[in-house]
Picture (cartoon, rainbow, N blue to C red):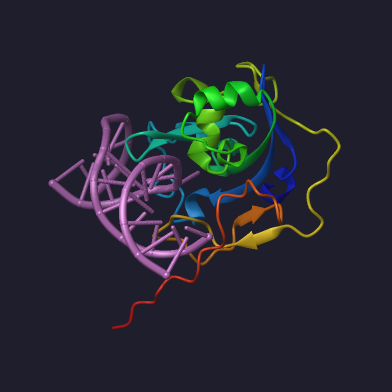
Length: 186
DNA sequence: CTTTGGATCGTCT
DNA sequence: GACGATCCAAAGG
């Protein structure tokens, strides 16, 4: 699902942005997933129906958002890591005073949540029915034929999997691919 | 452009 | 009580 979400459009009532970078998190099989050790109050949304939005709080100050992709009970999710702003740039700039350039508005998982005003109240939103005025649209732009691919960013575990995908050359992509982690020897 | 360290608190051990 | 699926400003090249 993750590469198929590239070039789709994340939209609210007054804002829209193209998804240009994602990461997959594979529940019980993935030590980097919040769901690796089973269901908790925090990750409960990931165990719900596909098409729901899983929003979590991290580093004491940031929100990040995922699309739930697994059948109910199977905690699969795709993290939105970067978007290219299309509509509502003024509103996004107002939400992100630290952004010097427009490419700073959505070039990171917590940045894009700030730009869209996504926080706790969006956790569990139904992206298909748009019950909280947030949804994913297809405007006819297909996913890249040959997406960029790399290890995931910011992890201490699960660093081998190539589960990050991005639109090659897009200036909103958050950063270049992480290098291989140092291997511990005994 | 890259590197580095500090901020800050909900969550699970 | 330790640690994040991060961001930012500051400093150096």
